[in-house]
Image 1 (cartoon, rainbow, N blue to C red):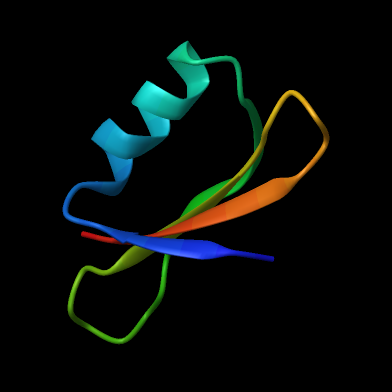
Image 2 (image 1 turned 180 degrees about the horizontal axis):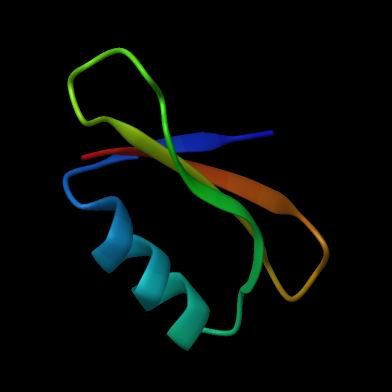
Length: 54
């Protein structure tokens, strides 16, 4: 599964949802004390993509 580093997980997730992706998992706190989060979305072709950031 490809994963992209982003500055703002919530904003990137919303952009992807607006572009036709659907929610798969997250956003979840990574739990390392930094506030880093991950999320996964499914694109219209069924591919799952991860985003990783704050």
